[in-house]
Image (tube, rainbow, N blue to C red; front, side):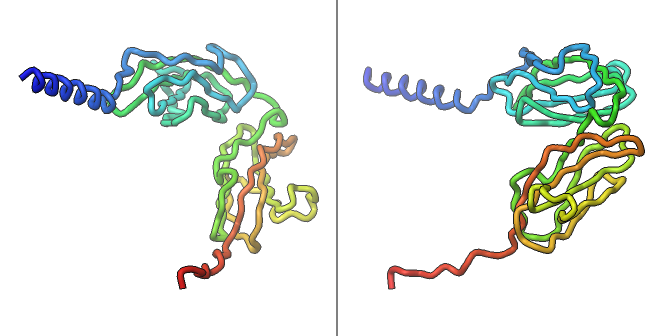
Length: 230
């Protein structure tokens, strides 16, 4: 009888231990510690890096940006879910409030809120933020779509695509201007390409964006030859 009771107790403990692995911890009473930008920051940089400490048990984070305040919203600038604790975004000059919280499948933490003011500045002090394609991608089709975020003060955007790291600007794969926030290119040759974008107006140009690269490879692998068994 005693042996049966011990087996029963052991089974219950094992069951409880197994269940704890599937119970998702609640994060309702927690709050995220924000690292940057500093609260009430005043800056002339249009591109901001929103950064906070990672929260244990959070699967992703909800970041919201409004203009000018959450209690008097005139414009919802951004409402997005991300998996990392850092997010880069380019905005127009203005007054903003932003907030972030952790979320998982069953609960959400409290929001941490900060304010930010961006002042107009010279275009040459800014840079364009690329969105697609991500760096390091492989394409099997020749059509490639480039996209970037709007930069305040820009009239047109110059897109350059090259397969020689822009060593000769007079002999590039593509060098065009457009007033759109994207461009579709059809490549004619396979290879690895680099692309970058800058904003321009009648008086000045912005800095070049970060350079991203991708590879166009339409040639399939060679046929596999079997060796053994016969």
